[in-house]
Image 1 (tube, rainbow, N blue to C red):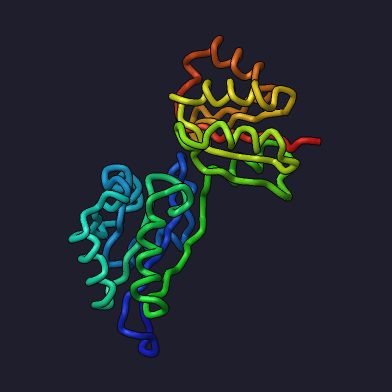
Image 2 (cartoon, rainbow, N blue to C red):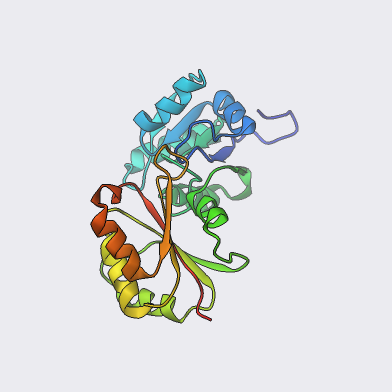
Amino acid sequence: MKDELENTYGKLYIVATPIGNLEDITIRALRVLREVDLVLCEDTRVTKKLLVKYEIDTPTSHYDAHSKPSHVEKIFAMLEEGKDIALVSDAGTPCISDPGVLLVSQVRERLGDAVSVVPVPGATALASALSASGVPSSEFLFLGFLPHKKGRETLFKEIAQSKRTVAFYESPHRIEKALASLAEYAADRRIVLARELTKIHEEFASGTARELIDFLVQNPEKVRGEFVVIIAGRK
């Protein structure tokens, strides 16, 4: 994937993968996944399903924030040998609320411009949810996954004061707790919940925090899958 004028180092491709529907992948992403020497995966079992569907037999290896230093050194050695590597997450765009950002930071710090870090854009839950929410998104604040404890209350107070749309990710285990905090600090704001995006049970629900709490209490089977929470800005 390198021409003769480029340096001898490999490239690190940041490849977006589907967030649910396996058809949501770009032609370029498929080409890169076929041509690189290694695919670094958050979970190799998840990525294998995608690779098998598209008959891609590139070797895979696990990588996350807990990977041993010795494994990270092997990644650097491959790049220094001129090998091309693709980094993927389980779903969506790597490094956005994702441990892959640590590797990219290390590569840029250690190898600088010697290694090209190349984004291969595609699906992301944030953009997908905003596009179908009906909430103004010319300006928005994205908070990723909220902290479990420290600083959590402060963030909800900031959300309540924001004139911009605010979005964050939440797990099914904490979605009702998050809505309870929004009911306390931003009771009158319009909120959209997006869940199971691009999957069979994709769903959007909107209302006040209290209305959405009642909705989930009445429909406990819907408290599953990762949520994107979107809060309209304060008028």
